[in-house]
Length: 207
Image 1: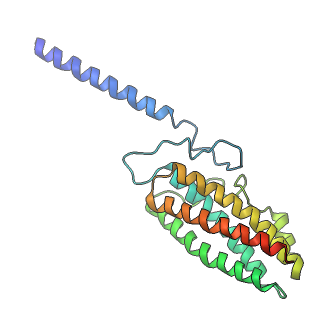
Image 2: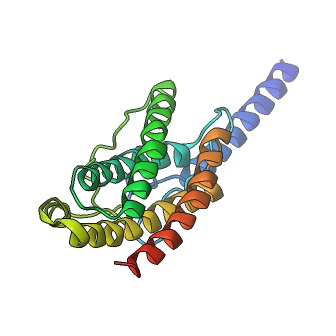
Image 3: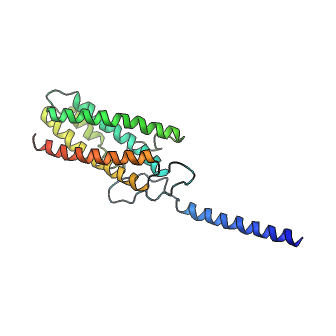
């Protein structure tokens, strides 16, 4: 009878210890999943999310993909707008084509990850508000209405800020992500888009 009591006491103590450890881990994640603003200077919601050791990805990877998809989609949209216009400088048209050709496949890749992780491909609020670098509806309409050199200038100005926002999000994924392919994509985005920002700034001086 004494042995059974001793065994029961040890089991209870172990269960209590594990419960406390679980609570401590959970407390580090409270409130993180509901935050998706990516503005410069704000604390990163991805960085504050603890990875799930039992999975091949974490919440940072999910948020990176869910946010980068609409971000890329707008870059493709702006590229389509400028490529449909007449009298666009050749250098700008080449850049827009390159952006579209690079980012459209990345959208498909990220959609595939989210489907594999069994999470929605869009956040509950998928408007894009709060994502750094997104161009508002008025800016998109101005780009649609502009022609020639003015359209090229607007495209470059919009896309510079847009790329800078994508680099910001990608750098956060590099620091907080767990999925190897997602982290590598983030590295690729930083490398490619920082180079394109420099290229766009040079193109602006020629208009």
